[in-house]
Amino acid sequence: MIPKTNPKEEKVIEVISAPENVAAFRVAGTVTAEDYDKIIPTIEEKLSEHEEIGILADLTDLEDMTGDALRRDLQYGLSNLANSTASSVPQWCPKNSGSRQLPK
Image (cartoon, rainbow, N blue to C red):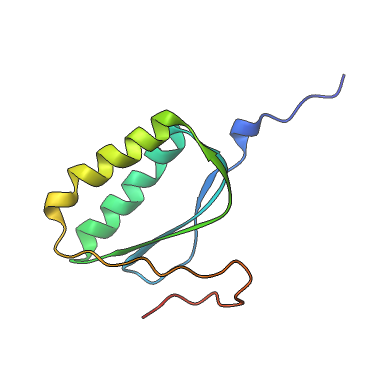
């Protein structure tokens, strides 16, 4: 019998290279609340080191998000809303734009 690969062993959210004041992630597959909980420490670390940070998420391979993951995202975002000094409009990059650089 051939062992089946456990999809949970695959990285759903991966930290990717970015400037020091940017928390950057590549998201693939179906995100669960447990997956989401794994990125919060990275964001918190950036917030402790910098007055302002950016968050970049490559959602090219995102397939789905569970209800619990969506709830966790909203809870975390809203709990930090009072700490935000400013908000900005996200800059969207087309999938095949060829640009991989972050705005400065």
